[in-house]
Amino acid sequence: METFLIRALQLIMSLSLLVIIHEGGHFLFARLFKTRVEKFCLFFDPWFTLFKFKPKNSETEYGIGWLPLGGYVKIAGMIDESMDTEQMKQPVQPWEFRAKPAWQRLLIMVGGVLFNFLLALFIYSMILFTWGDEYVPLQKAPLGMDFNETAKAIGFRDGDILVSADGVPFERYGGDMLTSIVDARQVTVLRDGQEASVYIPEDMMERLLADSVRFASFRYPFVIDSIMPGQPAALAGLQPGDSITQLDGRNIAYFDFKEEMQNRQKAADDSTGRLLTLTYVRAGVADTVTLTADSLYQIGIAASLQTNKLLPVVKKEYSFFSSIPAGVTLGVNTLKGYVSQMKYLFSKEGAKQLGGFGTIGSIFPATWDWYQFWYMTAFLSIILAFMNILPIPALDGGHVLFLIYEIVARRKPSDKFMERAQMVGMFLLFGLLIWANFNDILRFFF
Image (cartoon, rainbow, N blue to C red; front, side):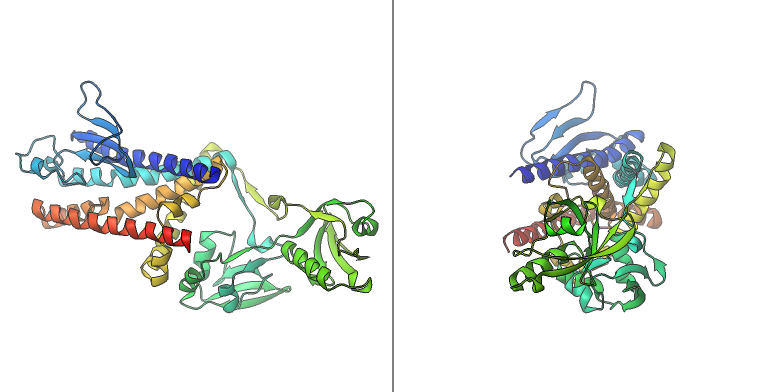
């Protein structure tokens, strides 16, 4: 229950900030062009509003709705979510949206998307300035990666070190790496000290979506955290901090080592069957010891669980001014990666993966972490900006599309057409919202 509440609080805080910034973009451009904004509402408020107030001498009423599905600003003289058709029947007033030149209306409509994108760039920059950038270089992961069954089926093997995709070297694990792999024809890996090639099928992403399991994860070494005095490991000279890399001459990672020891425990019946040869690394130097496990196939060691210390980590520090271009680059690359993966949404498997508020909430950590909170907020801001600029009626992109048509054709679409387009767009969006949250319900129960 505590985990649910922490994630729910992060989700509400993040979405509230994004909605305020998005609607604030529309609001500021509207006020810049002296267009009246009648209402600014966080969340939707059908039938009633939780809280509202109107400052003295202000044209705008501010409020908080009860339905946390977004928010809106009601701009005078505009066909929007409010569907205020009666206002549109009245004579045009100079402070109304419809009275403004097309270029001003265009800027008002893109204001929300622009502010969301700028917010993401700002957050990414401040993340880099505050925490820097830490990552594990893929080519320096000593034990390579563990791969899911789909990856193994096309030729990857546990322990492969990812080198490059179509000749472009990998740098770090992340969305960019996965995009590079699914778009590549050939991925080069380092396998048992030799380069090998894995050929990527055209339907790689569809297979991964159907698999619903992470493509790959780092193989962590078994690093000794503590040793019990008088036990086989202590008698053999092993020490805390030693990293066990091989068991009986075979490369082995943390989970493999534990599983192998459990399997041998079940099979061992005498001292000969309990003989082990371990290769370990201490201060960069490899050595080998031979020891005999006890009757329960224990050797008296405990592994370190601090995974951030088990792999080589590169950390880049940024000054305030250097963090800004780095944050812009990170934001632009995040947008490119998200856009490139959108095409899979229209596949059968992609539609199944579409998620609603449960999926969004699950991307936040189960314990409060400001770094992760701001990183996820920046990512959601990128998504919100992109989704809103799609040319779908009822979204900002739909209004932009009709405004571009007006500029090119030199005539406005009729109010009746705009009303019908708005209704169609709203039905589409609600249908998509229902489908996404229905997927969440199915995943929760099945």
